[in-house]
Amino acid sequence: MHFTTGGHHLNSMALLDILVYPDPRLRTRAEPVEHFDDALQRLIDDMAETMYAAPGIGLAATQVNVHQRLLVIDVSENQDALQVYINPVLIGSGELIESDEGCLSVPGAIVPVYRYPNIKVSALDRDGQPFEKEVSGLLAICLQHEVDHLDGKVFVDYLSQLKRDRIRKRLIREQRPTDLRSASSKEASAVS
Ligand code: NI
Image (cartoon, rainbow, N blue to C red):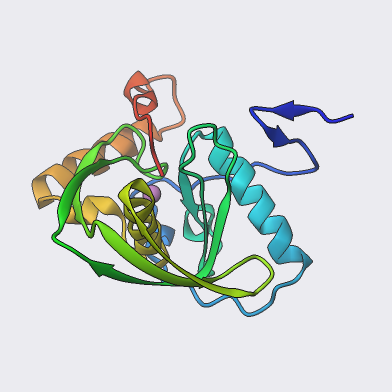
């Protein structure tokens, strides 16, 4: 018998803490994954569970303070099609398009970012097998957002200094361990 929630099996997975901007650890550049061992499988499962619980459509290892080039994505409507990308390399093409993005590390902020509409991605799967595919739409945007995290970039970097400061100050204020916490941190919807 299987007990599921929203289509996901509940095994012994654990929710991981997500770093929140302006945490300086989000600025770490991740190193390539070299060992496809049990610890990696466990990390992938925990990251997926953390992403689904948030809820989000993508999560980079950087965001859970693991500085390896690994990300999980699920852009399916029913959130039942997990994709794992290890050591991803992206090649973008097409005319840049503006998209409104959210980020689990920047709660409550929706930011317009210019991204490539088409992406050719080369990566390894969770077993270390290489694959390559061409993607577009939400998946292409999400991949660019998550690979930015692996490079120590956060999407607020694309904003003006003024707007970035405003978000930074709000998040610092909201992270104070008091009941002054604002309700606005719960607004974002499709975030990664
Ligand atoms: Ni993000």
